[in-house]
Image: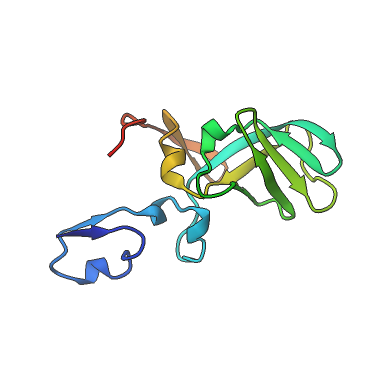
Length: 146
């Protein structure tokens, strides 16, 4: 018997009838599942600031093609007071509550609201641990649908 997904991760293994546990969203995480505090975000998209039109706005080089947004705009990770206010085929618009803390060329990370759509857009996924690239995973099934 197969089970899994994010809603049953905590009870599936306790049932002897279950012979397969499918990975769910919790394996990589996405913003709507942030309440599951026992997991951390593993899927993030890195971008760089390419334009600073004014003191509260930055434009990043992450287009919608890189992350997708069917369930809402991505969330900026680790930069308090900065939110995504726009996402299109040219890039992402970041807006700060006060002065924009990101300068031209600064890297930033985005958290997705639907990780399976984000992951399906990449040929390679880069594994980073403690700020260093540890491995690169080839996504041989990229673009396939189930």
